[in-house]
Image (cartoon, rainbow, N blue to C red; front, side, top):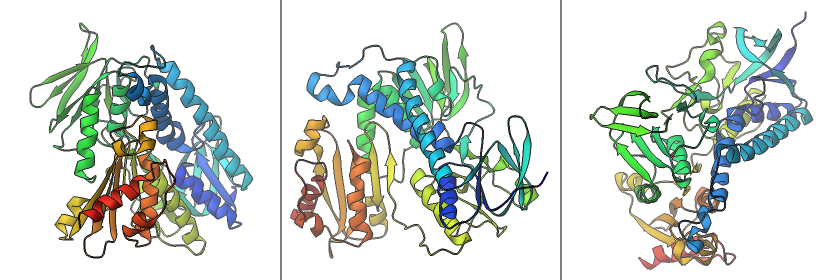
Amino acid sequence: MSVPEFDLVVIGSGPAGQKAAISAAKMRKKVAIVERFSMIGGVCVHQGTIPSKTVREAILHLTGFKERTFYGRDYHIKDDISVQDLAFRVQKIVTRETEVVRAQLRRNGVTVYEGTARFADPNTVEVEGETESQKVSGKFFVVACGTRPARDASIPFDGVRILDTDEITNIPRLPRELIVVGAGVIGLEYCSFFAALGAKVTLIDQRPKILDYVDREIVEALTYHLRRIGTTFRLGERVTSVGVNAERDQVFAELESGKRVHGDALLYAVGRQANADQLNLEAAGLAVDSRGRLEVNASFQTKVPHIYAAGDVIGFPALASTSMEQGRLASCHIFGAASENIPELFPYGIYTIPEISMVGQTEEDLTSRKIPYEIGIARYGELAKSMMLGDENGMLKLLFDRNNLKLLGIHAIGERATEIIHIGQAVLSFGGTVRYFRDTVFNYPTLAEAYKVAALDGLNKL
């Protein structure tokens, strides 16, 4: 049986793999993509970004969370929310997104192999399907196989009460009390989701502070809101053991300080493990680090020149948005197409309730670099649109140079923070000043108007 040959073989169909494959196909290259069975779209579509953000929107809708400003804290659209209510919406979106990815690959002539890939040699992968295996040859490869939740061997995961972040959407019933171990982005997001559903959430992390790369004022506002809806923070605490208390019909976590925390379920959200360790990369002349990640150069090229890697498998920043660009740029470099490197300024979006977003420098960055800056703040309570949306507590914060008024950083918390951040990102990228916001006419009423309010606030301080 002859081995099919391709100009490019992409391993993984998540944001990085999909864009790498389509970019190469548009350059008239013969492209194949390998993805595990029933996982077209990758972890992003099936277990990560899309399901978690869909759950968030479902919770906000079903709980009437945004309308409580008008109708009181006890207001609910649906009193008895079940796992099935959330799963129904997730399945609809996942099915739709999978169809979109499949259609894009088909339209661009990308051959799809469903199965698990392992390198047989530097130019060949073996794809193990449900019933048979097949070898596929490539002149070039892009490894974009994504990540899985990191697991601690001492944690007795059962997929029912003690779960990792891939399993949380399969939880049999919504917990009244939830323990979340890990206060990174994913842990914080799920912590806020379940707190919004009315659960008492205990969030544990061995670090003394959360999100240390985010503006401290924004983090303080986030922790205030999370405490208000039922979250207890146990920071600077290390979990020593986890188990099930059969008598109380609960799970527990023992802490190094001697505390014991009880709950109906425990979510373990301490980091991610890249899947490259499952590809038999030794056969291709490559090795991974302890987290399964591959090292690449500025062009996303590994130490084996014809093998590239992109997305979460190469580590920071591990965002779906940046992964898309990495995959596209990898293909451009492979086939000599003109391209620019990913700009240093890219936005972060953290989909907690409330959501937060940022781009550029923080006050801590500017202080350490001795850059004289001023702050302009717009509080959502001043904006008619935010009142209509039921968010009185959000804010937009601009940092700018006191001397030349150049914009230096934008930080937001509240309704649609991850959307409005892009206005500031554009001005920041083009080296604009805070005067732009003062002198620009924004639609009224909008959240975008916050930029003018914040600019006037900052300039008045000068």
